Every structure is written in structure tokens, then in C-alpha cells.
Amino acid sequence: MLFAITGILKDDAEAGIPALQDAFNEHLAQPYRRLRLAGALRSREGRRSGFMVILEADSFADAETYLHESPLYQASLYDRTEIAEYTLELGRIG
Image (tube, rainbow, N blue to C red):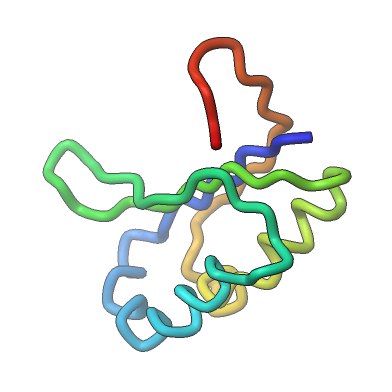
């Protein structure tokens, strides 16, 4: 199954990201995870407002584990997060 995992950053989170960038990149590059898409969400002003990934996982619990392993999640930089099963209806991933 595919899952959309979205994390919306707290207003003051931008300052904490550089110190976690290497760990966050390693988190995204895990070879045993099946990431299909990953990227930053940006506000109208171009400010990074969050991140979203499309992850192939066996269950909501697996997707939640992936989110909870994120260095940004562990550092409490997200204001809110959401995990939803993603059903592709148009286009192609992969």
C-alpha cells in the first residue's frame, strides 16, 4: 500500500533544521524503505512549511513507525502530522 505522510513545521522550526539535515537525509535514504516521492512543502512566500513523502508500506503502523523515526519528528519540529493511505488515480509513481 502507498501512504502519504505529511509533516507541517512549527513556525519557528526552520532554525532547527540545518543541525538535523544530515540525519534527515539519512532517514530519507534508508535502503530498506520504499520511498516513492519525497519533498519539501513551501508556502506562497517560498518558505519551507513542511515535508511530504509517499511511502510504500505494509500497514498504517509501518508508515507511522517511519514518521516517528524522522529526526524532525523526534526533535518536535512538526506542528502537526498526518498519515493517509494514498490511492493513485492518475499518473505514475516509480
